[in-house]
View 1 (cartoon, rainbow, N blue to C red):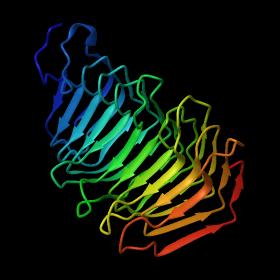
View 2 (tube, one colour):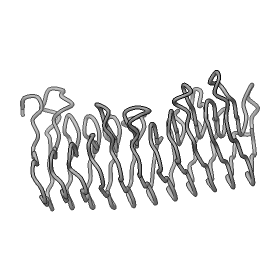
View 3 (spheres, rainbow, N blue to C red):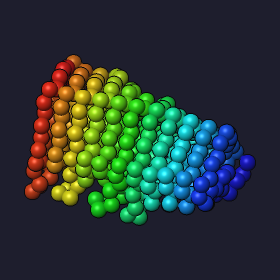
View 4 (cartoon, helix red, strand yellow):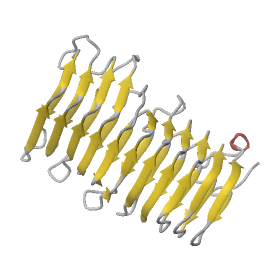
Length: 301
């Protein structure tokens, strides 16, 4: 109890480190608030392997992977009850895989990317995981981000996970979100693609938004903010439903969007201005270049 700020239970700084079969407990109830206390903090740690490690009850993150910790492997880990994120992937990290792990009930994001300083986080695979805010956090459960229009992360593959909550992609290129299932009880869209994000494909996912009090804007939000920050996205073969959302797929300020083979099920109640698919050019001097809507069932809007 009573540890100082930025204390980490394990700090890894070196190549080819393997940590297995541990439970790490941050004793959060007996610490002052500090988002920089983590279970494992890895820096300059290429080929780090974490297997069957639990990190719980830290005032910061369960795991923090950062700065040159390339080609990491995370397998069958769990992060629960931490004050900030379950796991954070920091800048200057390239290549890494997260398999069969559980990030549940952490205070902010369950899996977060934080490039910072014009850096990126590239080549991340997330598969077979459970990613769930569990009512503790209404924030995005998964973020995939670069740090600006000129420093976009790339090459993420998020496939075959259970995602309970909302997912954000911003300044992200050449990435695939596919075959994930789940429910999104928050007011945020199931999937948000924002700003300059090129070649993002969202395919074969299912997401249901149950009834909730208050406004819910959309199941999927694809949005740009300026001529230099317009996304290019394909939404293919998804099954998406909401009991309260005003829009199924809302697209505004995008450069290119393909919507093909999706099912969009709405609340069955008319809402002023609402639509199953909403396409609008909103960036002055930068019209939408391509918009395709095909083979899509749009019901209840």
